Length: 390
Image (cartoon, rainbow, N blue to C red):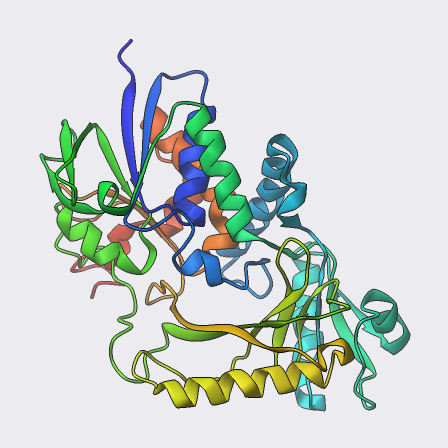
């Protein structure tokens, strides 16, 4: 039997997880290529909070996909020796005002009704769960989500890329992985051309290019309307976000923390830094450097008020990242709506969903059968005349 040839474009967390999953296949002969114009994992995935959760996700099909994927992370880590990068440490969250805490209590009730582990805990339990914190004097309760956590994406991607390569995957990066054209029609042999003048013959093209999904899809034959994401270029776009890394920290937080003024977790294999974000940081691709520096300092000051061991820390790095955001907030997974387009997988929840989507997408690619769990997320919903494409 001739091997099925599959080219995955984009070596972020989702593309890498898919390529690795395909190399694990033993029932169907498959040749896997993984291409990226940068080093694997050095795009948005590198800067993600990488919070593993299905917390507040709706509708129910999206929530269920999230919980399925959280379980898939555990399976993936177990069979790949993922102790170095998999952190199922739980998540603490609280609000500043009583109104916010009421909404949080409502979320806990909603999540538990859906079978998702969540509870409200008191001040003593908060201190036990996160001894590194200096708790605000007025904090009396918080929401605790024990099955959540995070992934150290750089370590995870490096590990899975090497495992995929060892199992026969053709991994190309830099000019050799920068796709400049995709020739041929879907359903038949295709040729992927790269910036170094190389070419790759394949049967199936899968686009896992994150923010670059519309551009890569156009190269592969789809005009782009079938795989829309929020445009990051206009001033005020919701796609860009500021990420800050600070350190050193002596006593790093054990958990993922969502506090009213800063979201944080430990960063690095040795946890000597912290990763900082916040929902009220208004930046875009046009924000001046001076203003970005000011925001970075502000986030560090907010974190210092909670973590005394950040007293001597400084901003180590900051970056405005562009998050791939489908306009309705839901993943887009499947063959592009336009004839001749690639198979597409793009989602704002790329880290959480990566191993679950890798399992489902690999099954679809190798069997040719559509999986019912992906039905709500098809690109066709954005086709002209559909509810999403109007």
